[in-house]
Image (cartoon, rainbow, N blue to C red; front, side, top):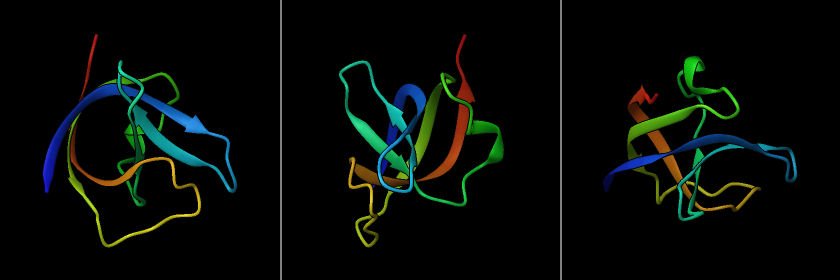
Length: 75
């Protein structure tokens, strides 16, 4: 399933650590690696087009795992 997310990139310090996009309503989406290096910036506001990866489970278990297809920086 493809989705569009608007949120902020955050590094979640849990287990071995995980990068995520957190929305204004506190939904968390874990970023599947490898991801574009340019998006891995704490506090970066973005709009992301992504594919939800139902076939992947991670140690962090912080939300749906997404594979980023493209993104835009906001503001």
